[in-house]
Amino acid sequence: MPIDLVPFLDPHRCAIVVFECQENVVGSGSRLPGLAAAVESSGMLAKVAELLVCARVSGAGVFYCTAEQPEAGPGSAKTPLMDRLARTAGDEPENTSVVKEVAPQRGDVVIARSHGMTGFHDTGLDACLRDRETQTVIPVGVSLNVGIVGTAIEAVNRGYRVIVPTDCVAADPPEYAEPFLRYTIRNLAYITQSDTICRIWRSA
Image 1 (cartoon, helix red, strand yellow):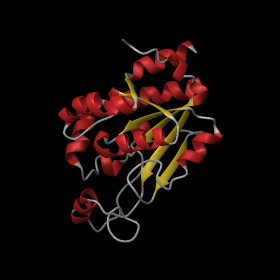
Image 2: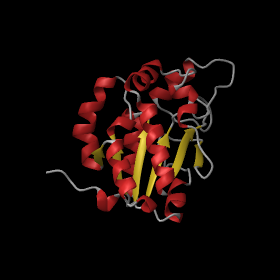
Image 3: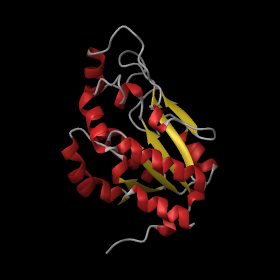
Image 4: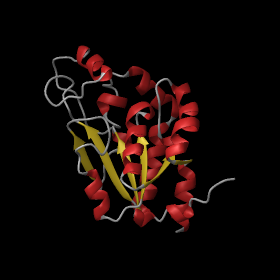
């Protein structure tokens, strides 16, 4: 039986968390070509952009979580993923800016993460959300494999409700997304589509 999401989507109690939609992650400078290809083929960025416009008009909070940490050395996460990225790093600094399709606007909050793998780890995101009395967190971006699920778990651990619009996230490989959403994310978060969220916000 479908769950009525309207009670959870008061825009003034909602916040979108845009996770790692950066040039060096999903843009032309990505060192994760499989993930960048999944984002491009799915049209995810266009869906995120539409959702952000609706959020700003409706009064929902818009937060960006960007990864600024070095791929090796002090402060870097000690994971196989970061080790692989370190081995492919060039001599020139990477472009860590948010891709233009979903670039921050005036009034949005950009929170740079210098360590860890999720949106809440040592970032101050939780305090910012509580300042605006957020109750529902809507994570979008990449990747469903790590950052989105990790951020969803940490949001739930802090007492937030989580809603994931399935057309605003991507995984590598793309075929991983559907079973992961079905068997993992749906136990942590309510899953829906971005147009459903926008319709509810417009009605509000």
